[in-house]
Amino acid sequence: MSRFLTPRMLVYLVLAVLALDVIAYVAVPPAEPGAASGTACAYPVCFIDGNLEYPAPHVIVDLDAANPTPTGPLEIGFWPSITNTILTMWIVILIVLAMAIGMTRRRDVIPGRLQNAAELAYESLENFALSLGGEAARPYVPWFAGLFIFIVAGNWIGLVPPVSKIEELRAPTSDLNITIGLALLSFAVFEVEGFRKLGVVGYLGKFFPLYEFRNGVGAGSIALFVGLTELLLEFIKPVTLSMRLFGNIYGGEVALGVVTGLTIAAVPVPLYLLEWLLNLVQALIFSVLSLMFILLAAEGHEHEEGHLAADALDAGGDIPAHAMRASPSGA
Image 1 (tube, rainbow, N blue to C red):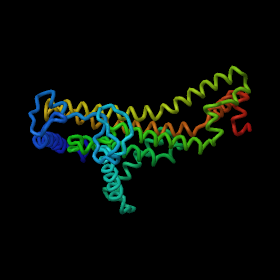
Image 2 (image 1 turned 90 degrees about the vertical axis):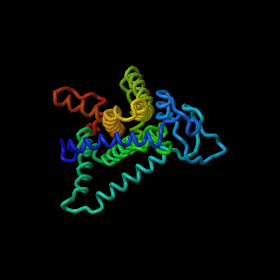
Image 3 (image 1 turned 180 degrees about the horizontal axis):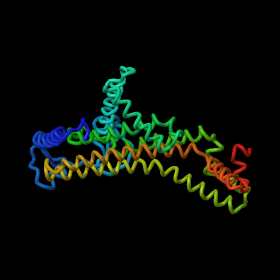
């Protein structure tokens, strides 16, 4: 175990979680949603309901009072408002910015502890990204690292009381609106990079490979079918990114709420540790997939065909005609 997390510190952390849960139970006892203040809460159903939140976030400031806000847990619509997840997201942004500025404000040749920690964190993320995508991933390391840090901070803040204990604060990534926004932002980045790297014709050619009809109607039809399938999957990417992150974080909130409502303090401690690890993994999955999608978008089909031509040369065989057309050396 590292010097930063000694057995004594681990014991203190566990005791702190127990104390915070007991304090939260005493200061803000479970209550049936919508019930009047002071109403008795029946165990166990009311204890569980009092610790759960519906997927729809709680509205703090309604920016359009004439337009009714959602009343059901799964009601879908457009309500301009400031919700508890947006407020918590702003808090996360301020915390991350303050830490980044504070840790890198004085950049010395011989770094201090804070600067050393910041450099270690960034270099670790950079090395991990390069191990996955090679040198092609280097320009996108800041995007990968920024996504990971923001998402993991947004996940972990939900484990820190009073977040998720009061209506005004809630983990931003447990809100489908936030995860869809992150996924659409990532989608825009890798689509823009695809057009920027390959050009309009080159990028659209990945989905509409009409040039393959020069090799025959059969080859062209198969290539077009595959291209249209890839186009459909391109629009599925933001859906899978957003739903995976939302489902895991919201599911963790539900599990913690149920266990905490039934046991008050003791049992949630190991579940907190499990959720801490799960939140870390989900942030890593989202950022890694975003990085891979960018690299795939910026890589044309001619990259693969160029490798086929090189393999044919090494084997002493003939270079396929379509590889010759795609390879820069055969242009």
